[in-house]
Length: 272
Image (cartoon, rainbow, N blue to C red; front, top):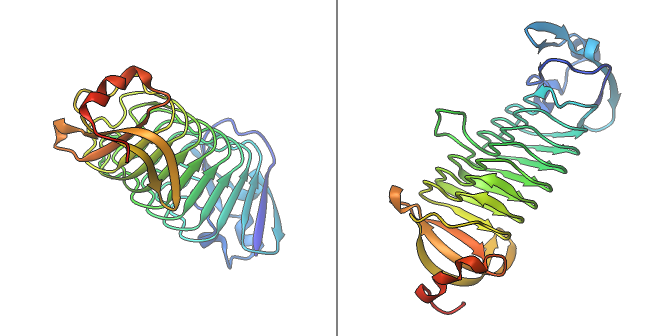
């Protein structure tokens, strides 16, 4: 059984949608689903009071409407598919373990926070802290794939420990901060501080980067870099760090978009 949830009214305060995953809804009778309780602000409300619910074939969950104030869509989901036809709020795919989430609009901060499996696709932009840990925690994204077709904010992949974050557009500051493992690909520009305090993993920047942190060592020039089964064409300057943390992470910076750091060429060898 699949479900289509159509928002009946505008959301004025945050709505916690963490109970609404395919794992939790499959097998429930429709009248029981109508009576599911959700926190709307500091009050409980019935799912059927907020959404018009339609039962369809298949096992997908489709949610229609402006959900920019809805939080924790796909929380801890293990399987199935969720499609959001509109914008989504904070914590989409938080602690996700499997399955697939697609957001056809924009997504808020902490997209894929602490996820360990599955795939999230955002057709628009995403906020700060994509694939990151909570503040005060060192447990960021451990596995799975996040793909963003627009831009993302600051601190992408903070404390990231595995998986892939692929961003077609640009990002703010500090992508890969505290990164331990995994891959972050940035197709556009980065505002700066890439890889700060990283100890492992890869950050690949195809666009403009204002400067490389002084705690990174110039390593080599490489003609391309492989991300899963995709070969990303460079050439790239490759830096290693963050040396302040004893790190061995890799920062790949596109040569063609960053002539202002050409000084590093005298320190590295031939293009592979």
